[in-house]
Image 1: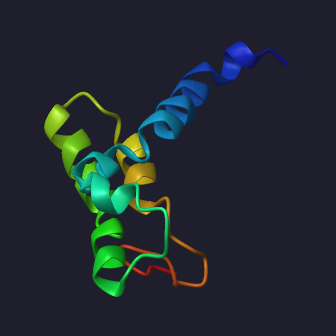
Image 2 (image 1 turned 30 degrees about the vertical axis):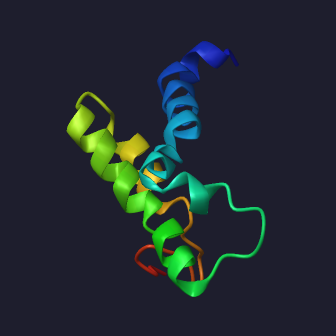
Length: 88
């Protein structure tokens, strides 16, 4: 089976992989690059990066909904313990 059949899906997966952490641009460098453990308040800021990333991609326009969904939910865990929404 040719990979060309899956071309659009592969492009979406590639774009999602490249853009999933774009929200980290909105996290101050002092927190994002901190070498040690984060404080509780710093971790709250880090946990905001998926929402900020989805906002950035939405405002940019032309980004597929699937890519934005990956950006928003890439820290989701099947048991609901992930962030930002704790979805199961």
